[in-house]
Image (spheres, rainbow, N blue to C red):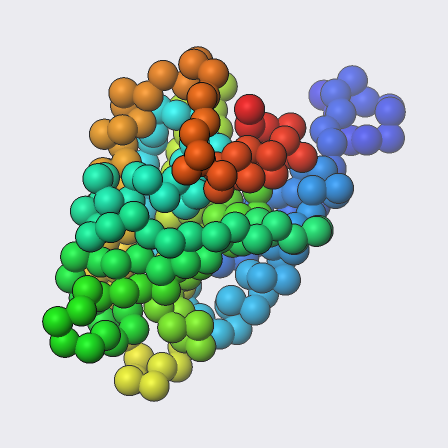
Length: 232
């Protein structure tokens, strides 16, 4: 058996641009869908320390995993936020789809911006969606955010493998994050996904979605997915 793209062998394997960054192997299957991931990961590795998170198998297609950052209505009932977050979506030509806003958390965490006593803990939220399979979510102040990278790898049976990696700032005004704080960030991310799994396990993805007024962000995401040949 010969492998190669010169036409002389029985089998041929296509060549795709790939990179190993931030604890993962990323493959660009179509050059026209380059959204600047390599540059983002290069910058992240310079400013942050990469920490392995976890992986889990979920029974939904990959694009549903990434869609969660656009579904403002699910944050309060599924993740226990005090109220529906205020989110906005910002398309970027040749770049990632960006979601920005803030989350009113039930209790403060060390990586969130401080709030006056008596107010809800408010966390800055920014998500960069590089494809229907990959999102980098920033939590905390813009000058020293913690970053959660979520990659969803689809399988032929309609399931996906979710892999989560976290990145913490190399330097921080309050000193480097402790092992306990990093572990809390990883465990908090896992808890959020386990809460989502309860919904995904009962989701019928064969039904054509009927969007309402509050689904503008999800519609923007699905339109973005279509440039990759995914989404409805």
